[in-house]
Image (cartoon, rainbow, N blue to C red):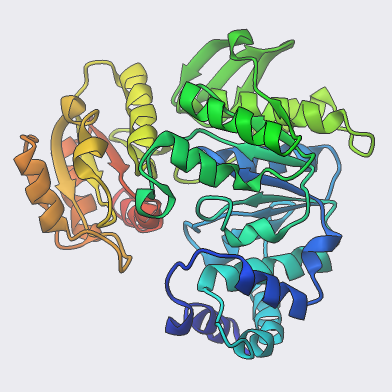
Length: 426
């Protein structure tokens, strides 16, 4: 099997769709020898911040000298990004080899696994083969019924910020969504949570009590921003002075506080040691594409994958901090199931004009439909583009040399927007 054949098989229509439940994953793992039982995990759920926190934790643990697996979704540029060991993506040849090995087991199942379940199984085999000391495992959707939840009790369960997203699958209230994501909390486990929402905290407290799990929160009152600009941020936190993260976006300091708290809890366990130096260096070295990423200056081009009200509000807070009263050109594309009105509420006051595009995803909302919705909301200067390439060109023309373009709405268009912007800005 070649790399191309492997991707064709993984993305085959037979696996399409999201069907919650763990039976298929358990069956496939059993056929593969249950590789997940031979691994240690940090399991990360939440609405926003999962990817950034996962990247930070993997970087810190690598700096501490461990062999670290990292499992995330979706990918930005290449499928291989989804599974990494010590920052190196799975090689094309190994991806093809493992897919060929798994194929007969998946094909033999009466109830075929979904694409995500297949990829999760592939990743577990990959991490076991490479004898990872620990795997930072990002949930795909929800928690309780997500295929990643077939793992044993993790070293830590981490619940990042909770907001309204995927409400059709997870529920229409913060409590219902938190309940679904709290499904990764297992009997007697340790849990680190982002907090900052009383409704979510109440659910987490109850679930942890029911499952005899220990619940910890960052000490945000000890978080002191020192400097934040488009080059990165410095802050003090809980005894650490002048910690640096290279990622702008004010919310990243809060994500970093969760990571530090998680590392401190992990450090309290007998078999782990993460030095203060590893925490400091790991945070400073973390890079994560598509999260308030500064792609270019003059004009300033920002790529941010925020795609739900909670994430968009955090992005807007950062934009206000960095650009004050400047009006921005927003390049936007969303999935068809998104609540455009709630997503755009915070954005409208900052917008000079909008350019809408259709992300390359079968679930995407068409650019002209999105443009009409924005017009109905009274948005200024809305232009529907026929392609991402045209959308990027129009946005740059409208911004001129001194303006600001911010791309938001979906992680699924980050890679395409980045590629087109780089071509146009050469």
